Length: 218
Figure 1 (cartoon, rainbow, N blue to C red):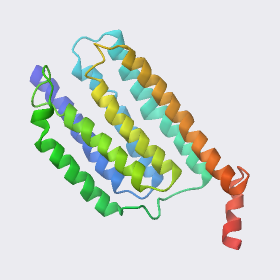
Figure 2 (figure 1 turned 120 degrees about the horizontal axis):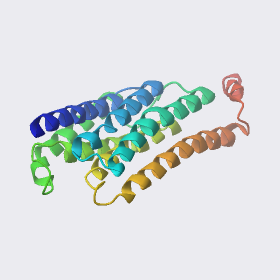
Figure 3 (figure 1 turned 90 degrees about the horizontal axis):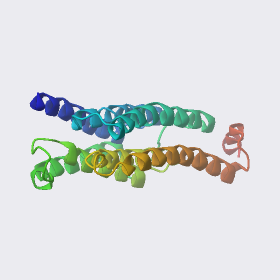
Figure 4 (figure 1 turned 180 degrees about the horizontal axis):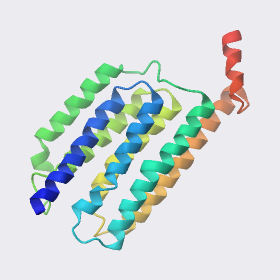
């Protein structure tokens, strides 16, 4: 039974790492939002598989991840994306294909050295530590190489997903981590709206996105 749970957990974590590469290689911001939302919803299942005793902190961590990461925050970002009328990340600092290659190389290196990174008490065959590190690195790549404000926020979300995975190892020992995670996700939602509002206001002194036409006319 324990081996079956580890296999299911590793299956979810492999999907999360694959989604990291899809996020790096996609220019459509709406698609990346869906990828990050799917990733967040999948991560909501991790605490249920990682801890056999379904205590209140574990259930809270799972419910918060599925609700906030999988539904609320993607919905807020989609609304902000439509308001700003942005569709694509046009010219990233590193191209989409090189970004995939870089992400794959980093993930491969992490997987190669993962046996030395697994702490005591965690099965050696578990992918939770390498997935956490690979996801954090993916978030950094998105955060540093993308110019659109929404894309940078998506990078922050992916980075936070990596931190969340690692935090699942501590949810029983430090229940406060769960509450902090919920607050952090709420902050991310506010962070999204604030960045979009500030960028549009600074550029056009208005939230009316029809003012974007003036750039073409000038």
